[in-house]
Amino acid sequence: MSDPIIKIEGLGKKYIIGHQGRARSNYKALRDVIAEKSKSILSRIFAPFSQSSGGGYSAEEFWALKDISFEVNEGDRVGIIGRNGAGKSTLLKILSRITEPSEGDILISGRVASLLEVGTGFHPELTGRENIFLNGAVLGMSNADIKKKFDEIVEFAEVEKFLDTPVKRYSSGMYVRLAFAVAAHLEPDILVVDEVLAVGDAVFQKKCLGKMETAGREGRTILFVSHNMGMIRELTAKGIWLHEGRLQFAGAAAETVDKYMSSGQVHNESSVDISNHRNRLGGMKKILTRVSLKNTNLEFSNNFTQSENIILEVSYDAAPAAVKIAGLGFIVTSDEGVRVGSFNTYMAYKPPYSLPPQGSVAFDISSRQFNPGNYYVTVSIGSHPVILEDKVENPISFTIHQSDIYGTGYLLEKSNGVSTIKADARICERPAEKV
Image 1 (cartoon, rainbow, N blue to C red):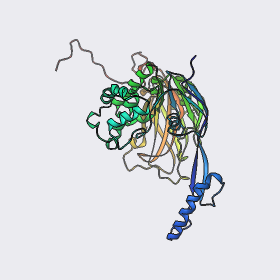
Image 2 (cartoon, rainbow, N blue to C red; image 1 turned 90 degrees about the vertical axis):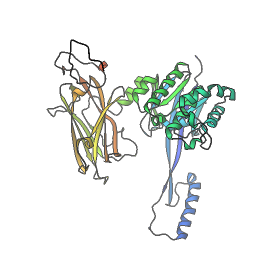
Image 3 (spheres, rainbow, N blue to C red; image 1 turned 30 degrees about the horizontal axis):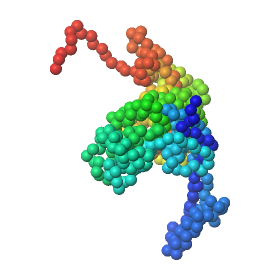
Image 4 (cartoon, rainbow, N blue to C red; image 1 turned 135 degrees about the vertical axis):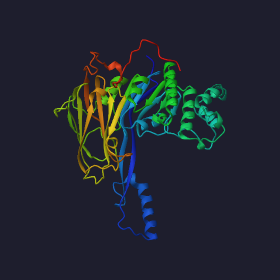
């Protein structure tokens, strides 16, 4: 067996987070401002060597990654998943040599091309043409090799008209198209892609995924971060799940997704306390308190036939957070990670949007919308249609069982898709008319 192309042992990345104390008065003389700024600068310089800085400035350690160990072999297609703040992007930046690790050993054999956040790897003052050659040189390619791929890169990126324009004038979509084209076509040994592809349009995303599949079949190694579990299942063979900076699981992509989707759940639980749930997104306020599933008899249950309704109850308390609540909603995802649909109180009621400071919302959901299978529910609450105050991912799940919903004896299966289609069918004895 050949040596791994990536080998990581005990990897850790530490940041020092500073906290500035509150001012004692709203009014400050110029001399006070100068004095405080001077103290702040000195505090920042000496903060790593002291426990306290006189109350004006304090620092604490934050480990974005801790004790990460895994191996990737040549030709592996690896999906990296985890919630916001899990350390996924930090890991990719270390592997791309953008960020230095604080501890641990990393062995990378081969050329790495990275597509992380928009702006990484390009010089804004240089034109698209110049950046193509610059990136190729960084990858260790000769001018002759770059020229062979040049036309293919430009055609893929669809930026021919703007090749001699500085990339700082590109839209984010143009930037991503050219960055991906360069990273994928200059044939690196390892292609590292973050979810920056979400910036592009749907047609280009499909184009990128096709190119990544081709690169994988050609034996190149791919590390891919995405929140789209269906894409992870389809595109990658192996999975790495990070949680709060630590490696939670590594294995087959499908198994990794299954464990990630069902994390934080108690098996067959139909009512879950989410006050301190582990799946709460980082930085959210603890407003959502409980989520429950009931049948139409108001009995707790997470098993439903396609003929009955689901009652989803979500309780919340925003009083301690002193936040005005405008709406509450949920997202349903299949166990393959496909987003089936969503609903919220903004859809159910006309403006002005307002909910009481504490209480609950009960959603009456028709089960016939779902084909047989397992589904996960994410709940969220906000102070505005586009401002979330709290969100908990997949704290509860339910199962849909077959039922004769059409009254014809035809029973749907999971293979029919993730949603049920209701339509009328008219049969005629003659062909349809031509236009």
